[in-house]
Image 1 (cartoon, rainbow, N blue to C red):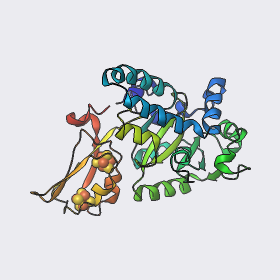
Image 2: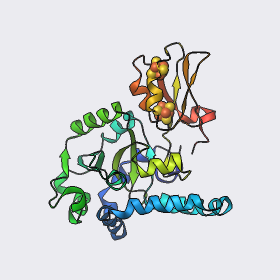
Image 3: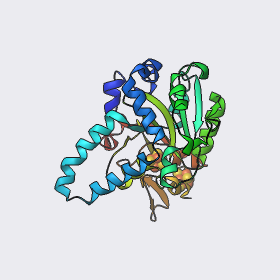
Image 4: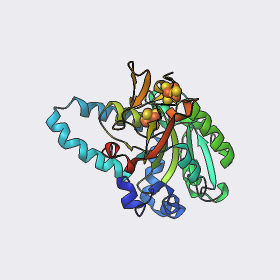
Length: 282
Ligand code: SF4
Ligand code: SF4
C-alpha cells in the first residue's frame, strides 16, 4: 500500500474511498482557489517543468536536500497514482458525473487539444460544485470562449473512451487537488505528460506506482514484443536467448497497458505487496 492508502484510505486503496471525492471537501475555500488557479493558468505546467529541469541542473548534494522537500509539498497539493483499468471501473462504481475536458498538461507541453482528462464528481452534473468551480474560471485558452468544451459523459461512455485510450497505450492516473480530494482521472504518456516525464525521466516523482505489478507467463509468451513498445516505464526487456519478454518488477508501475496489448493473455497483474522485489518502487 502506498503512503496515501495509509493516510487517506484507512489501509485500503485511498482512491477507492468515496469520502476522498466528496463535494464537502470543496467547501474549503483554499482548495477551490487552488483548483481555479490550476485551471486558469496555462503557464502552471510550463513553470512546473522549468522548475524541475532547474532542479536537475543543481549539484547532486543540493538536489538530494531540495527534492524531498519539493516532493513533500507536491504530495500535499497535486499528486497522482497509476491505476489499472479494473480500478478505474471500481471508481465508477460510486462516481455519478463525469466531464471530459482537454488535458491541461498537454496543452502546455505540446499545445494541442487532447481530450484525455475526466473530472469526477459523486453527485449528478447539475449539483456538482466541482463543475461550478471549473465553469467559473476563465479557461478560454482551453475550452474556447464558452464552456461547451466541457463535455458531460455517462459512465459507460467514459469507460468506453478510457478503454480506447488504453488500447492506444495511454496509462491511467488519478489526481488530487489538495490531497486527499480527488477530482480527476487522466490518461498519460511519457512524451507529453509533465508528471510522467518528471517521474520517469527526471527523477522527480509526481505519482505513485499502482498497487499492482505485471508478471508474464513465459509459456504463453511468443516473444512478439508488442507489449514492450507500449510500456512507458522502460520496465520490459527482451531475452534473445529465451526469445521471450521479461518484466523488471523493480521498474514496473503496474499500469497494465502491456496486458492490454498482448493478444496471448500472457500478462497478469499481481498485488504489489505479494511481490517482494516490487515493494520498494514507492
Ligand atoms: S505481447 Fe504478449 S506474447 Fe507478445 S511479447 Fe508481450 S507478453 Fe509475449
Ligand atoms: S511492464 Fe506493463 S504494467 Fe509494468 S509499467 Fe510496463 S506497461 Fe505498465
